[in-house]
Amino acid sequence: MSRKSQHRKAMLANMAISLIEHKRITTTVAKAKALRIYVEPLITKAKDDTTHSRRQVFSYLQNKDAVSELFRDVAVKVGDRPGGYTRILKTGTRFGDNAEMCIIELVDYNENMLSASEGTKEKTATRRSRRGGKKKTEGAPVAVAADVAEEVAEEVVETVEDVEDVAEEVAEEVVETVEDVEDVAEEVAEEVVETVEDVEDVAEEVAEEVVETVDEEKTDKNEEEEKEEKEEKEEKEEKEEKEKDKPKDK
Image (cartoon, rainbow, N blue to C red; front, side, top):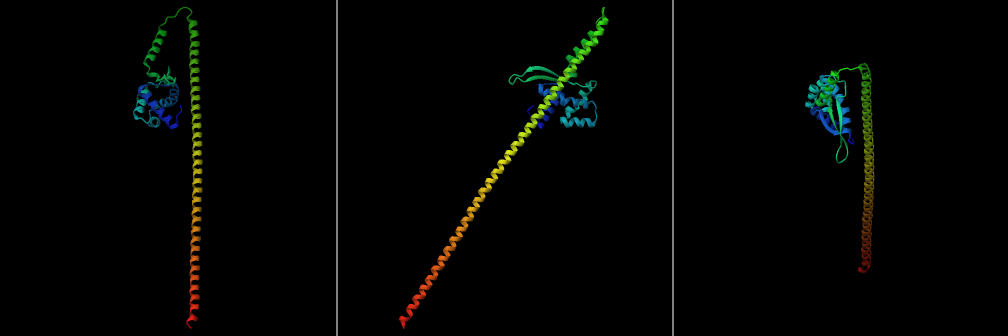
């Protein structure tokens, strides 16, 4: 679903809370299939009304009202059902991105379909038998078996599609993590190059400063030596002049 794991878990938890509170929600087919895998185990845990199961469900939903609704009402109503608590009804495509839309609902809260199924049961129960009834009764198990086979085939197809969707999500997450690692490696490499360049610049600056200080010391020494030579020359000249002046006085 092009989402990271934390975002996907939060989205599924919020959708599960909405489904428990409103009993039916409208969403995309991909999200509905992921929500079915997420919420049906929670409903199964809700059948066992214990503190441990309540804490387990709360760790997923993080909503006290939804947890109490699930254990108080939903679990009681679906207590006799061995599984398949949700139903997905496709409603067409969405205008704009052409995404497949559907309605996901809790099976036992659709009163229209429940009343229709009860009406069909009553009609079949009050139907009178005619001649050749034995043949019909013999064909009835075959029809029931065919219906059950079709339902099982549909469920198998849906589970295969769910597994494929989960596999695609895992592959996308792996690709995202690899891309993140590559980006981090590139950033680290760029930082290392920058630090090396900075070190080189600092080394050049230090070398220039050392050369300047050495040159200054040399110039200072040369100036001091020149001063000393000048002073020595001046002293010698003064001594020579004094020596020249002495015989003239005699």
